[in-house]
Length: 121
Image (cartoon, one colour):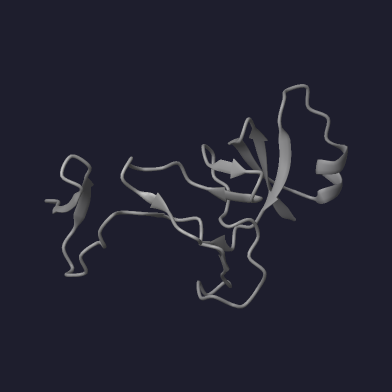
């Protein structure tokens, strides 16, 4: 079984698990195209069951999620831009203008100041 994303106007509307034969013969009256996606692909890297890169073939940049974008020119899926200041990197992942601090605290992005601010839990 494989995962397939239903894409309409570049936006993922649905993700299902199915056999290719089902997709090939599936007739749906609503607009959209079914495109194969890999649950094991993130950041243009293929991961094994242990969560580690395994050298497998990365399929279409990232696993497609509902609301994700499908870029047909590059044949990749990626998430919506979380903030206007973030940029899409070469591996199809959105990056903040500054790196998330790695000091064990919880942070959230503050777009007004374009900085990471500590978050109280």
